[in-house]
Length: 195
Image 1: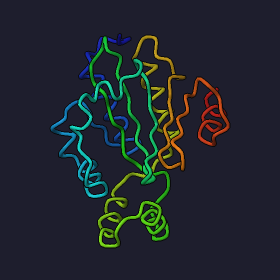
Image 2: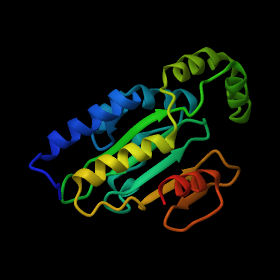
Image 3: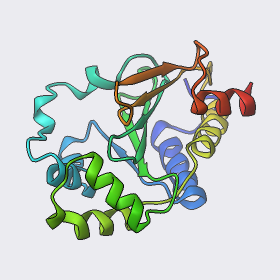
């Protein structure tokens, strides 16, 4: 439930306005499939992974809804970061995608390494470079900090320890739940700053 007299749409508009104005971070609703399919992020995924099809995931709600108010920080094998926010069911069925964003500016060597690691064809180098130059540069800890401040101010019972980090950039898929401590750099930085 919301702590204020705001309705959900007013809360959503305020949150997205704060994220966009302070962090230049775009937000979209994953459950609005038509908008998601036509978003530049989805079109980029289709260039990189031609077999990508959102409809292979029959139910996005089941894919991301693991717990109410849960944040998932996802680092792609393409080295960009996205954060998925599952709104509590009693407020909305929305599942929000924040980002994608980069944590460092894309350089020529960054793009070259990215292309080699992902076995990408040289013919799409300019497309990749253009797309990456368009992404905001933000530290994911700053995004989480901002989200925690917003969500704890407006959502009754918001628990800022419900954060999961999924890293597709590792050789082996790594999933970290911040409730369980581990020695990852991301986790250490989060606990150092917020615990």
